[in-house]
Image (cartoon, rainbow, N blue to C red):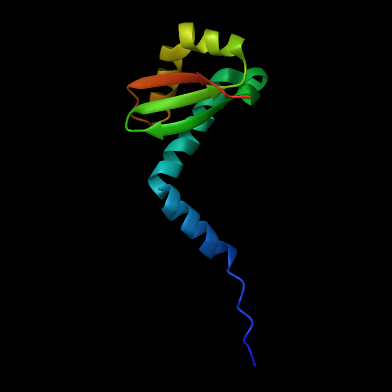
Length: 102
């Protein structure tokens, strides 16, 4: 009699994804802090149009879905975003803004 394989537990699948993608607790916490700081800084009208794409060794990359918002953040508000990220406890030396591919 063949034994039916036991389904993989969701927790085990998540652990594999986290390990594979290099998403340790430290990186997830930094991204969570950056997201909160970004959304607090942009407010309820603009925050749905921007997200933190990555947080890596002093560089936070923000992805936006609007060319107008890209221009505004890239040109005028990058330093303000960097200050907001630092206030949230992140060690940020650079903020990069990129336009999301549609």
